[in-house]
Image (cartoon, rainbow, N blue to C red):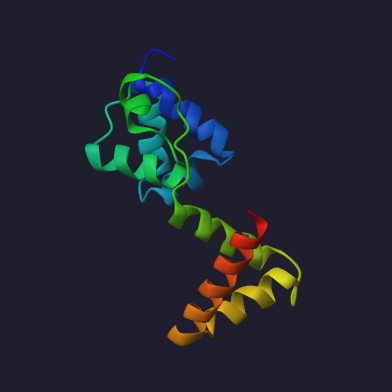
Length: 124
């Protein structure tokens, strides 16, 4: 993939979305996505949006250098867990655990931290 338009086309294809849906996810039109796939020249803001929403390394998208995949950070991993949670069974263990954690007050979080630290020490 030598050009940015080739790489945008790759991200589009890998997303599994239509040009319309891909454009909507980035707040641009299907026509604009078609133009980008043919000619490139996206705005800096659009490059940032593509990288953020599709977990693409900016350096790869702009220059074709390195691996396209951007590793998930902790917030992304939590968001993915939450999204997966709501796709699963109602009243599953994961759902009950997340809701239980969400209801903890500060002193309960401190107690939970002590319990986890104790378990970790016992495992060593």
